[in-house]
Length: 289
Image (tube, rainbow, N blue to C red; front, side, top):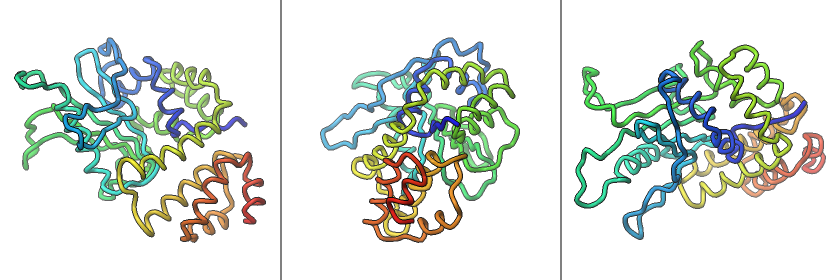
């Protein structure tokens, strides 16, 4: 059974390089009829810095709709500290990025942020898809110029059109992707793109996903320290092992052993070993687990 990991940074970006994928995803998530989406072009993911010491913002997927709406799509597998603040920072930078000195405020465009997170971010709701706009205490909307979507990949499905996308990103094999396409015709084009992406590069995607997490810690946000950092590394190791194990399953005792480890040096070694291993058995033998 051929393993895949569309949550990995390399695979995620390659998937959205195809306009048919971008159109279908935005139609399902934003509720826009597909025929109204004439074009969705890729934009520069680097947010413009207006002064030397300003923090650099780099979006995963930056898009512009045919009505000039600006969209940021991000996959976040690893838990981050202050994630909500980070999304607001990016949204604010997107909103002001095009306005130059002397220009009118009417030039400012609608901005939408879509986050796919592989951990529980919103503990006060069972819904996996939460949408936020600027409203007053009675719910009356001030404007739709700012909009944030949080999609939590680990929560129960509800029968919405976004369900198929959650199944797709949680898929660990090509067979699962084919099954999604068979069950829902509108996902056939998306599944075909996945088939053509060259799934033999799966290990490259997984390894790239690990180094992306390292870059996030160095250059962007703080990861949760101490217990939180150990928890995040343990989750990363388990995620990598699921992608190289038969049927995506890991013995429960191994999961418990990994989660119980708090030594940073040991977790780092396991993380690299999991990224390099070709099978779960190889990893266990190498690390004596």
